Amino acid sequence: MKCFICVADGMYLGIPADKTERIMPSADAGQGAILLADLLAFNDKSPVHALLIKNPVNKTLLTPKIESEIEIPEESVRRLPASLSPMEKYFIGAAFLNENVLLIFNTDQLTEDFA
Image 1 (cartoon, rainbow, N blue to C red):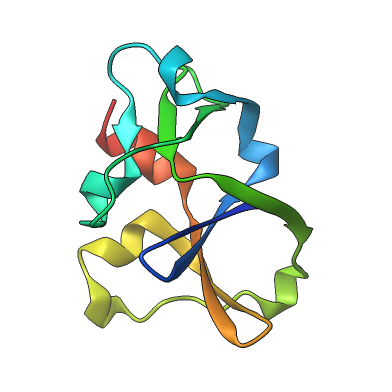
Image 2: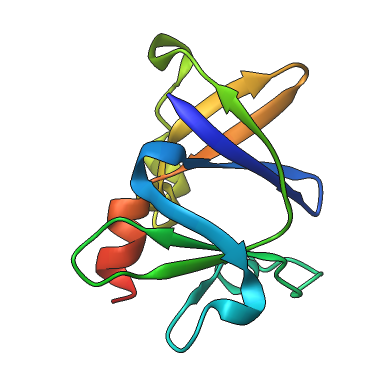
């Protein structure tokens, strides 16, 4: 699974590349974008990039700076425990990225809940 990686408040976040139509500056996002900083209560609320998500409503995620793009083996992605509810539904799971935990977004659920 190829993911775009961004880091905010020490959290490593992954957005699946196959669910992303394009990356653009956050100023080009338009109305109704999902601000990940609000969803996860980041201290820094300033988005750098906007990712247009492939879905029927063309929803955009406003994210911190995309730092890199990496390939993560599907078998290394672990489901998050249900005890993290209600937030766990917004993540496909987690994987280790060197010594850090990478949370991988479920863009389908995000765009469904915030359409």
